[in-house]
Length: 145
Image (cartoon, rainbow, N blue to C red):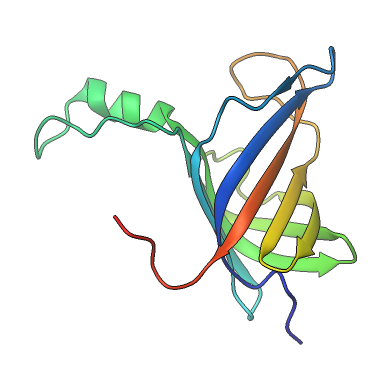
């Protein structure tokens, strides 16, 4: 049975609400895609918005560190939709702490727009908890480079 979540989605709006103060940040717009297949497979990659390419064909250690640090999230696995919730079972991740976990998200699909809200989390760079709300648009074909 198909679900309207199936397809390729490009991030168009990103908001982060900090739980301790209620502050909402909307000044970030990472580059991101998420894919849901009819067979229950998903993939997601999110990187900072302005990544600098390496200077040459062979990356230096500093370039590798900079590029790795600019990955916000990247993982793949299976998914199931239960009502207004999608559960990602992570099979592979940029952050091994996520591999083997279930990542639960609230979802809402309206036409060609998908809104995903995360559970409370930290960024790993400080202890403040936040909830991300990501608004995606369905994309047809391959994006232009």
